[in-house]
Image 1: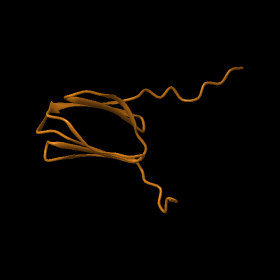
Image 2: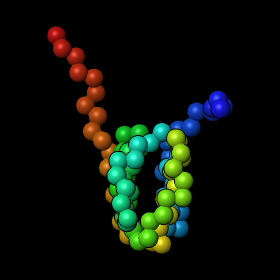
Image 3: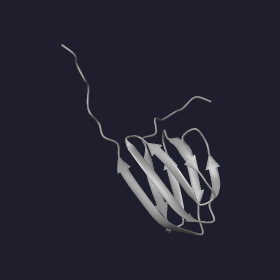
Length: 85
């Protein structure tokens, strides 16, 4: 199926119990109570209780917890373009 619209990346936390990633992302690690996702230039580490993966598609991921206990968002360092002379 052809994409009609380009989706920019977004991260939505709903009711302190679900995490929704829209747009291009990479699932870095997944465990029984944590998920680590890279989206654009950011890495999102989420931990909580009773993780359930509701949806895991090309450009949409939805993770539900009974409660989220920790979220850490870090921006990846951008060194820019390196040119040699």
